[in-house]
Length: 419
Image (cartoon, rainbow, N blue to C red; front, side, top):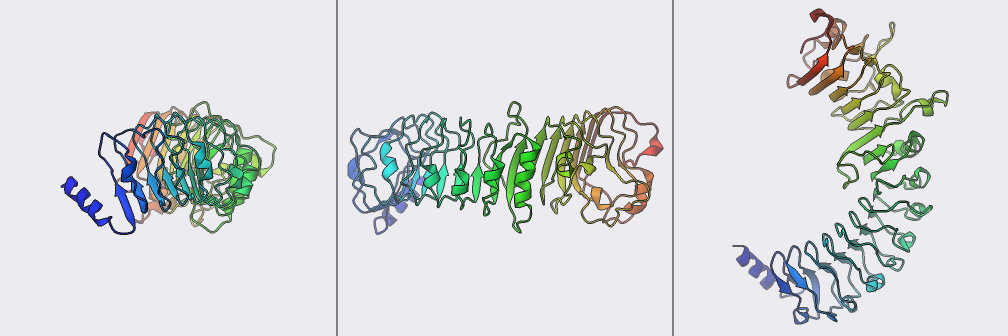
């Protein structure tokens, strides 16, 4: 059936625009006679290409799209792109053995998208300064150690993924020149330049690392007032110990991970609190110091996503409560109280309980997963006082709640709300 469909596709593409599709076949050697003069699009995706003959230079002046991805090319002959002046899309992704890239790529001035994603052995990309029509540049998971020369001239660039590379630094003032960037994924070993990022007003997807909370706050404040739905995957801390999935392609999520940072006392509100991004979905706080005793009091903004916050907290010794409302204060109608969808609390030696006081019932009404581990002082889960505000079935914790509690010391059975 697949052979029949492939044959039909090849037959259909004999009329203009002319396509050549050789996807998922091989092994084979590219033959120059197959590349007719008026080809528009060519795909060899996932084919077993043994080699491209030395000196091969297909005469395809109208070719707009070329896909040579997901096979084991080690090199491309020097003149191969010589007669492809109208090429707009070049996909060389997932050629894990490709070590050298032709300098002739630097002259493809009509190019709008260049993907070298997954070319792990590729250490160098030729100068790109002439490719002023380029909108997409993907060098994710390549071996490059320097930003391609001339990248600051790519003023129409909208998509730039440099994560997974061996870049150690990003030259200053490159990003402000790329003012049309909508998607930016930086190498996790590079400290994201907050001042430069603040100038990217149309940015709606970002992945990267800030070395400290000051730069993280500077970046978040610059984007907080934009009335748009944007996505981010941000790590704050040193790059020594990173979660496995940090630095991958940006997912459609809003996630912040903060690890091994100290909140400096006496430095003003911005220095003594976390600036919680608008509509955040996932938050992880690990081994941070200088926090207030009540976890939610450490955040300046408390507007989470409509689904609620998936939150993981570990090893923060100062925390005694997740939510603690002082006597005389009523937050039951407060619209900006953090609402939890999932809560994981681990290694809190001073945690007394989850909540205390007259809190907003919606803080835990959407809770579906609760994990408590190694909290030896904990005495209360949900106090009886909160039950009066949870009588409405709409606001009670989810009936699908998954509860895991390990090594928690209860004073007595009547001091917590049993789920």
